[in-house]
Each structure stands twice: as structure tokens, then as C-alpha cells.
Length: 513
Image 1 (tube, rainbow, N blue to C red):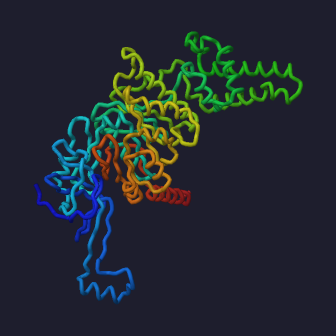
Image 2 (image 1 turned 120 degrees about the vertical axis):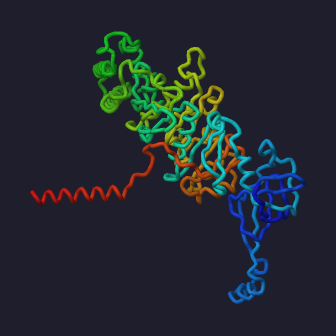
Image 3 (image 1 turned 90 degrees about the vertical axis):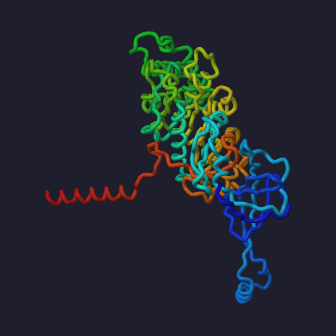
């Protein structure tokens, strides 16, 4: 064991959770220390520190007074630090304190050997994600099983390292032969390359016969509270559309999305014509549904023009396209938020229902973790989305059925507090905005005020790691991911130079001509 270095002496009142010590050497915020008291050893983390010269009075300070005092006292500086006591060091690791240490005991800088022992990977469930920020030679492992079953949030401002963090986590899942489904809003993961696992990119093509009425309404942009439009849509779907389309039988050319849209529009136009014949007064037409039918027709025309590529007759169900023991990427980059919302709620509902169903008929035999990028758009605090309901269900019930949920967001204050509070694990990189910090702190009892104060000062790739997946809250430098994806910032300056070079070349050719 390396030689121990005494840092200071405990002073004042000490609780089982916090102590103070004084030192003539400067402690560092985030530094691990060991306190020895009555034959026991306690591990602590320096949460705050300050310095003072006890010979300098607050009264009548002048440059001359300070200079004279420093000359007489040798510019003596005393440091005081507050330490969060993480627990008692034992053979099992870290255990909760039953009684506090006593004042006047030595405080040591935690040696590397002890930290290695405390933070070691105790079994196959633990995977490495980085190193201690204060001791880069000590690796940090998390319990991946707990990260999946107890859910997790990865939160940070743009450019703080979210994509790299997710890349590291994906590598660890692949190493464990795990199954993941990434709901990729911006197409960042469509070219994902992993050294230790296969990647399966899924394009969101749906057999329209598999959509329920609510999902179809969502694709049409119909609000769930719009009773009139829902009524006419229900009339079309239930009463007037050829049964062969829903059953999947019949000729292929008569059984596709174009056929379905054509039948809907024809029926609505018939209904509109009947109303025109019956009703004379324009105001009554609106009351009885003509305007509603017109709006619904407009929505159908828009859907058929913009999102026809989403639908294909007899398309393989999205659930069947998920490959077990692989990283699956559902590419939603070509869709707007409303359409993505419908697809996300559709696939998540299928995943949860499959895992809850009959074991002998399950498509997904092994647990799965769902990773939702831009989570604030769908698990939204202020926006009513179709996804929010099923996300809440997975957050509450998923653990029992082996469905994990990881939310990734640069706007934590936009996340639904009920869903965020059920993310029992968090990797929080740099957060600057006070509202974001406060919202996250309200959602996690493990995020103390002292830890929140670290958030604005974190550099890219540095994070606070808390939750069931780690023994104690940690300040971590996340490893550099080897996964190749599109999440990195584009090289702006070099691209500009290339563009300028190309323009000069063109002008030269023009001159020759």
C-alpha cells in the first residue's frame, strides 16, 4: 500500500453524513478522503472548501495592514473543508454509517489501492464507463443490470458529451450480448459502427392494417379531443372500408395504402355530397359536419402526399424487425415530431405488450433497453403526446417485464416530472440553466445541493453518476467511445476552407474559358 498522506483534522460537530476538517494544505472539491476513528475507516468526498488567514481581521483592512501582518505571520493560510461521508469501508465495500466519527481524528487523502477496492467490478453485471475525476487512475464501473431495470436518464447541455456517453453505454451492452432499441430522431446512429456488436437499422415502414384508430388519427394530426373528426374517421374505418384491406386478404393491388386512402376519400366525398343536398344553410352545414369533413379530407390528402413512404401493404411488423442480442436503430429522421410520436408510441406499446404476454409466444425472449433521444419532445412536461402514456407505463411497469428505458435530453426541464422521477439512475453532464438543475434535483433524492453546484463547472465528458447502478454518487470522466456515429459536431472551419477552395477553382476555370 502507498504511503498515506495526512490532509487535516476533523473539527466541530460531526453527523453520520457530514463532517468538517481543517488543514494547512488546500483540499480539492471532489477529492476522496479517508477518516479513521475508533478502529474504523470512513470514505468521504470533499464537497466544499474555503481558506482564511486567522490573523487578518475583517475590520479596517488596508494594504499596509495586510502586508505587515503577512510579514509577521509568514502569510499563514488555513483551509477548511466540508466532507460528505459516503460510508464505512468494509470487506463488502461501503456500508451505511450507524454512528458518526469523533472530532480530532486524522483525515487522509484516499489511497489508490483503497479506491480500486471500493470501486472494483464485483461481478459480470458491472461494466466500465470511465475514471474518477479526482483520481484518473481509478476506473469507474456501473451495474448495467440496475441501469436497465431501474431505468436511466442521460442529461446535459448540447456539446457536453451525451452522444459519447450513449456510445460508451452501447459498447458495453454489445459486450454483454444485450438487446437495445434506439429511437433515433435525427439519424445520428444510422451509420453506427461497433467493434464488439452488430447494428440493425430499421426503417419505419408500417402495414396500415396494423394501426389502430387512435394511431391513424395521430398520423392525420387529429387531436384526441376532436370528437367530430374522430367520429367521421371511425365511420370510414369501421363501416366503409373494404374488409379485405383490414384482413390482409385479397389482391395486392387492391390491398395497399393507396387503396385505403382512396376508399376513405371517396366515402367522405359521398358523405359531403349528401350533406350538401340535405342542408341549405351554410351555417347549418358547419354544425352538421360539412366543414369537419372538408378538414378531414385535407388531412388525408396531406398524409398521402407527405408520408406515403411510411406505409406498405403486408410490411413486416416493426416488432418483428427487432433483432435480439443486437443494437437496433429505428431511424425516425425523415419524420416530423407528430409522426415520430405516433411511431414511437406504436412500437413501445408493442414491445411492452410482447414482454408482458405469454412466454411461449413472445417475439422478444430476452430483456431489452429502449433508448429515447430528444426525450423532452415525447416524454414532455408541457406537450400532450401519445408517447407519454406508454413511456409512463414502461417507467412504472417495465422493470417487472425486462423492459428498460433510458431518456436522453439536453432540456431536462421539458421532461415530464412523473417519468423523470422514475429514472432511478442518472448520468448528468454539464447543466448550466438553473431551471434544468432544479427540475432534475426535484426528481432525484440522490442529487444533493452540493452535487448540483458542480454541474455548471463540468467540462465536456465529465459527469455526475448517481443511482442504483453505483454504490455512491461519483464524479466521473466518461471514457472516449470508439463507436462511430453522426452525433459529433461537424468541422465548420475546415468545411468552409474546402468550400472556398472549390469556388476559387471554379473561378479559375471560368477565366480560362
